[in-house]
Length: 224
Image (cartoon, rainbow, N blue to C red; front, side, top):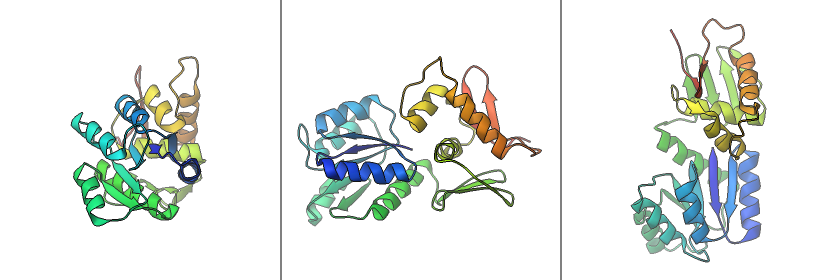
């Protein structure tokens, strides 16, 4: 999933970016609140991890601004201070969760995945479409009793599709969420990776799960 990190301390931002990318997230980083507000109102992020104390505009101000504009993506606030009233203020401003520094990467990832599952209406760390399952914790895909070996990029693509079964994702959306760049009409990158997934998931199966919607993009769903 595509996540925006807003943190003005460069070492912390680099640590967060590396840790999330190692776990399959697509990550952007910014160091100013005013830049974050522009990005969150113009780019399709799935979640944001944002420090409270930021130059340009503080994190709570950014949070209130995006909520007023009807942007409801999950936001996890970071702070070096752990007073109860500050956590309450953050949550009342529209934060979905709060994490005080210092923290472990494992805890941050667990909280972030929980927020994403909640936003998607998924209660478990497991996505399922028909007889295909994708475990977000162990990062294992299974179809019936067959384990499917996936590269990191293939896993991210499959996670995107399985997060919303039946939804048609355009090539632009797929590029933005899986590769973090805008779609180039001259490239067949998305189609190549879809074919790789099809070979691993649908080849030899009676029911094909990955569907092409001509002129639009791709979706995953169980067909009768």
